[in-house]
Structures are given as C-alpha cells and as structure tokens.
Image (cartoon, rainbow, N blue to C red; front, side, top):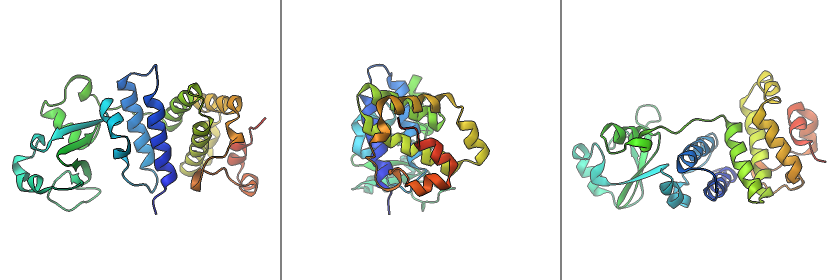
Length: 236
C-alpha cells in the first residue's frame, strides 16, 4: 500500500518552494530533484502529474513530441501505438527491469516527458536538444540541507504544519538510514541545528498534523530510542 503521507509531503513542498521570491528556477530544479529522490526512499507511487505545470515551468520535467525521442525511428511502432499514460523504459519495447531497463520517462499523450538527470534526459542532452542550463544535471543535496530549504521557505510563508511534517520526516529518515555513530554526528550538523531552531521558534512540534509514518512517535518510543528522544523533545 502506497505511503501517501510522503507523496503528500513532497507535493506540498513543491508547491511551497514554487512560491519562493528568492530562488531561481535552476535552484528549484535541483530542489525538486532531491525531493523526488527522497520520495523514492519510501513505498510511494508516481505523483509528478499532480504538479506537472510547476515541474515544467522550472525545467525539472521536460516535454517533447513523441517523434523527438532520440530512438523514435527504431521504436516507431511502439510510440505510435500509445494511447494512454505509459511509462517508458530505457529500451522502450523491452520488459521493465530495475537494473537493465529502468523507467526513464513517461508518455501522457500526446507528449513525452522526462526528468532532469534521468537517462532519457541525458540522451536529449547528447542529441543537442537540451543545451545550456538545461544540459546541467541537478545538484545533489544532503537530505538535511534540502529539508532546511523547504522549512525556511515554509517559515517565510507562515506554514508551521509543513515545518512539523518535515521535522518528523527528517527525524524518521535519519533514524532509519543511519548507524548510531552517524546519528551522533548529525547532532552537530549546521542544517539540522538551523532546522531545530526554526522548529522551536515557530512551535511547530506543538502541532502534529502528520498521519501514518509522519505522526510524532508515542512516549514509549521516545523512552526506548535515545535519538528519537533528542529529536522530538525540544518543545518549550
């Protein structure tokens, strides 16, 4: 079952960042890339179409005619037969395989779409159809640096709910994917401490708008796991 809480968090974050008065499209493009990388860490579905206009506007997603696919001539019958939303593999007419034939784009007729940084995007770059800034890969960011950018923007927009959700999500991510030594190092990370300052300043943890895995942990979990206790017990 899809973890909708993470899908919704990423969608809300894209919408929040898109309202920024300070970030360039190139900066937003990289932030969007990192957000969807984060989403892929969880059991989530494909959600780009929820905010496709924003993703297109800031050149994270690119739109082409089907005939512009670099391998269109070799797979003309496949592309010409598509009548509904379809994922496109690296080798369009072969069966999907996460290692040898991953999904690299998608068709929402009559257009073909690909994400910046994807193998299909790279093909368009090599074909000379994407140049300049569009040919540059998104900048990979540490999860806490990306989260800080969203949280700072959420604070600017007076959105404590999004701050609270991201604080829960970041704590869960760090706790789930790091060893004890890495968790100790994280306590001195500049972005994490900036985030904690904002959480305290805004009183975001007084809210608990999350559901599923983004709910704040119960008291017994805080007692059992020292890192979660440190992370969540910063109220007041």
